Length: 121
Image (cartoon, rainbow, N blue to C red; front, side, top):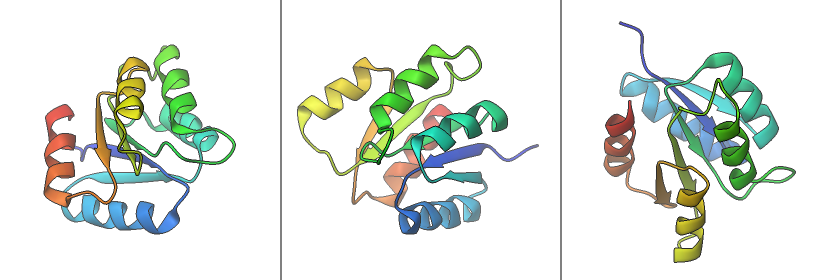
């Protein structure tokens, strides 16, 4: 059976690489994109099982990525978990309204994140 693909879209390379390391150790196939535009292209090309998406990124933020992915035929059904330092209620509500499946605040607990990923994969 193929390993579930997890697309990580985050401009902070240390976070992306750490997440990829953890996910690989837990039996996932991580893919990294360093910005929103690259993330949209990788999602269309790689067809991941789930996306972990940062909100605060230059050029195209996570909200824009989420909206774009939910509009596109080949990416609209991919679950998106927003991973961000924004802990305010407005950010959480906005993410869900735009189509995010879940939301987790940095710094996050690894077992909690893995449970959220497994719930959608």
